[in-house]
Length: 158
Image (cartoon, rainbow, N blue to C red):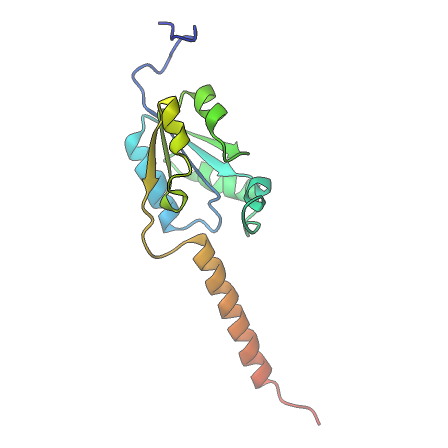
């Protein structure tokens, strides 16, 4: 039972699927994507992006990394939850024998290079609706509006 690399393939007939994300302010679309990945997998590995990785391409997450990791670990869906330190999954795919990768369609085309390694890439369609970025903006706008209302409600002292 040796593969072409000389190692024993314990998971010969198992499909290993990897999905990853920031999972900030965990919401319904995160759950839908993880459940979709689970439906494709015999073994599901979920990567949670570290704060350092996220801040390399967008605003720092509101929820700290360790808490986001624990939220994903608390789900029944993943078999394994790991930190994600890089957006380049070349080594990860090789080391974990990943067969398929699921990522949100906001990253469409970004991971096509994995197909050269024999990985099937699925770009999960979030569609319209909730996203961490939208939630962040809604909270910010609501807070700004609240501050304006408070300013108007203050009695003036003369």
